[in-house]
Image (cartoon, one colour):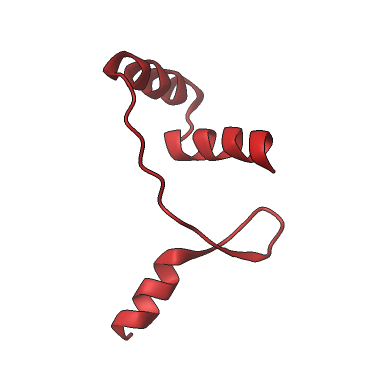
Length: 62
């Protein structure tokens, strides 16, 4: 694979509706206590932080 192919692969994912959508990274700073709380609650549910945050953002903005 070429470098561009790898880059394209990393930036394009299948969304829930089976359409292809480019992903962009969003970096935010949050208090350590909030991070611990999110991390522990996700661990209890067996979910990933990224999946839960992404779902919250989709519900609010789409």
